Image 1 (cartoon, rainbow, N blue to C red):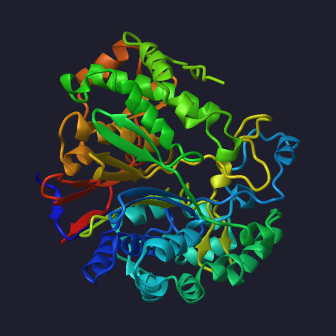
Image 2 (image 1 turned 120 degrees about the vertical axis):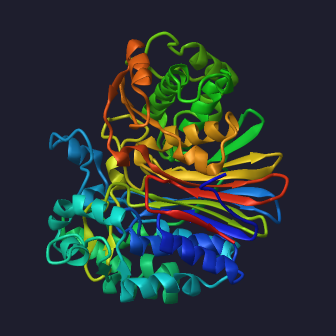
Length: 522
């Protein structure tokens, strides 16, 4: 079990060591998994501002030890009431822009924090935000991987005066080991600590955000923020080889991973060579079928034209399974007929509570728009809207866009055995499915499951493989019609996981070796 971190009383796994430490300190001082998740998320927004922050959305799966409930919180934001797809189409645009104020939706993270802590936490929100406030004010040493990502986003930050002033040092990204301070963000976090979500959605922050929107030609008004609320929803789940896999319902893409697993369940993956040609081929083809559904159906729950139950009905999954091209790679896959930059945190406490939490600005530094005097970069989730008339995910007033965020949890016998998720946008569903298969079908530890080489199917016949795959494997896939292309290290995601031994209850955590994070347990 080399590389696996073990503990009995609590564990946090995330992408930054200092954030994991903050979460574990909360646990060691008597806080529960919810308290630790919120403190860790706030800290990550300071340490890794291109990926996560108060300008983004959040989702959480929560296993409540006292009741045995699995709860799901959708804290995603909506488009402005004044959003209008036609205004984009008449300008000849085929998609919502990736950057700028028109890509912004209402940030849901702060409301998420308050909702989780109020209903399931044990510590005041102000106490949980204190470490993030101090590190934002006093500064922190920038990690090597974070500095690299930051440097790649310099041009994006330069396009917005407030973003450049807040997140560049003399016109450049901070280097590895350089101490970076965020006094504006510290003031905003302190205001949230003192005034709660109302400070953000009904007070000073919302007012500044509306003024920023008006100056840039956006459609936001105070009503958009005053009407925002997190929503407890029923999680969706599927059985997979004697386990129950849980995800958030739409507008997240969680059902895509469940579809992939259900399609693959009809094949004895454990009898195949792990990451061999036959194994990879089946996985890639299953991904194509599930993503065809994502592109056609995924939208805000109120706009979905089909239900999750219809998508994963036994008859439909069997049809997709039978439709896998076992001999040759399919280039285009149509959805089967239906009846009628992100950061992830895994937390476990000694009381049996488990939290699978994800928060994100979407792409690096989100929309590239910073709100003056707040230290806040706004997410660009609106880019996920379609502009196609009649599509369930078409941009409209006060509507959630489809989401790539998907915290996961796997249970056996009603108890969590794996808390898992990752950053990586569109790759999340296929990587999370690979990790779950690594654990369930091949008995890997959390560390082994995260460290194993990954594929990332892009589109059509194109698939990228990590460098660890052999030339023989590449040749075998290409002989079946796949076109293997190179992929950047960032394109394979960055996962964190906590496995739980069902007999002893020992927590076994791991953080993706592709990133700068770690798991800490005690």
